[in-house]
Length: 480
RNA sequence: GCUCCCUUCGUCUAGUGGUUAGGACACCGCCCUCUCACGGCGGUAACGCGGAUUCGAAUUCCGCAGGGAGCGCCA
Image (cartoon, rainbow, N blue to C red):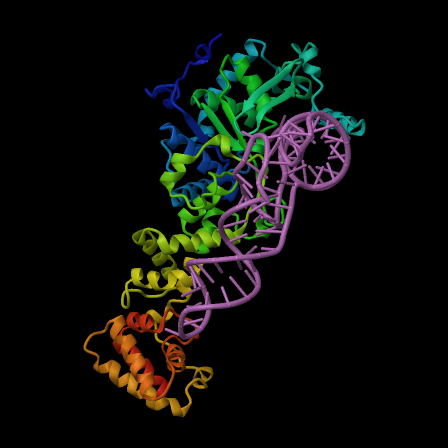
């Protein structure tokens, strides 16, 4: 029996002329929330594997849970993927649009005796479960309607898959190696609810089959579903794909990652000032490695990534290392791209960047002293906005410093060229001529110019703020 | 409870019978220095436990302990 026999309506993705031996991976999130860190890593692995093999990466939205799926979540997932630049070749496909196809396969299975109608009430199932638990057994359906004649039954029913009752399901997981399950452990799972809608384990199977998925890369919380899915696939006459179950990501305390660990949503990392390339690098390296290498460009990732090098143990998310990577990319990454993300943060803080130094110069000056773009934005206000002189600041300007400040101001005002070198020279001269060490002059000047005690080197700070504003701010602190 | 999975520095990891168990983040110290940083140099720190195999085990096998996931008309 061939799978093609079941095809009456042909979904559009089947009309593809692509060669079937090519690798086809899919990321299949359910839209019940944002794109979280774990999902993002799974998506990244799927994407990397497809890119590495010159295969196809497909996005499929598993929205069969009508209760919990929302359009907002779909959008959040799409936005997250876009920010990370994980582009897909096909999709997004929506399972809710494949209901006819699922129904068709269910009917076919019913006709062929591969599935059956089950009239057991929820109450009976509930009772069964309780009894089994009490007897220290694994709760599972007892196959009542499979073994009794139900032909003259009336009322609501679900459709169950006739799982093999004996033997084992064995598969070679690309991450874990050989995995074996006894069929006796499995039960006859519901493939259609009493309202006729199909369930997860069934829709996954049909779609993976129809979409000719060759490699299912997913979280290992699905490993228990795999033998069931393989059984259905076999009943349909399909060849099961290769599986790769990647371990979960844990919070910093080793517990399951959740909101109390901080950011979980990918887009929240954007809000907090991370660069997508830093997150991607971090996520790739979390649970996977290539020798001792820590920094990977996207191209290197594509080149070196391999399913076999994925670790079997779950990994704890470590924000410190992500911060380090983020700073690394702020210092060394593509200036244009960083400036674009940086501008986004400046805008969020309502800092007007239309006048003042170029973002590129600010990034160059700030990258080595900030860990995130958000922090960088917060600490770059004084390049674009006036500094408010506070009483606390005044304490840093004793009257005996006024002569040196005056000299400095006048020399700066007369400077032939507003360059880092000239400014630096002027600073040194002004300090020296009043018998001061550079530090004695530089720090008060820093406070006058930035309102704080921390900034890039004073010459660069002055250069970026600009001559007029520098002179103006020096005057301001000398007045008071 | 049942089934399955996992276990190298605090964290991410390298390691596939013989290594002073390597790297990275974090941490500590020193150097550099106009602040904060960056950078450079150095340091602390790990094979869960118990058996077995072997001349030799982080590496193989068996127990144990600990951790995780699944067991829905959720996905």
